[in-house]
Length: 102
Image 1 (cartoon, helix red, strand yellow):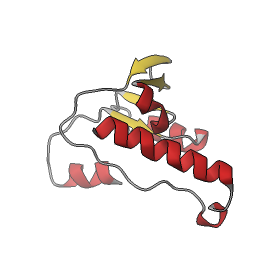
Image 2 (tube, rainbow, N blue to C red; image 1 turned 30 degrees about the vertical axis):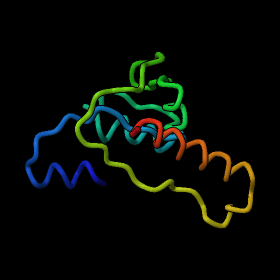
Image 3 (cartoon, one colour; image 1 turned 120 degrees about the vertical axis):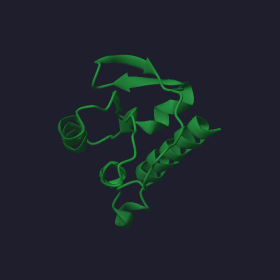
């Protein structure tokens, strides 16, 4: 994981947020990275500048001020690319991420 790599090189950081749709993976993030301030479900919601935070159990603004954004590719099964629902979900996530950056 990216956070573990930063920890190994002794760079001070504040883990502001993570985003994960899958309940099981999100539960892992909550336990493994207990200092993460916010854990959102869908980065696609960032285009609306707010999202549900599972850590705080309420809606938070997502236009958080950060210095470095580390993100990885969506963990979707590539065999399902033909499915419109998967493509729509990936498009929503990508647009939310772009909106957050710009």
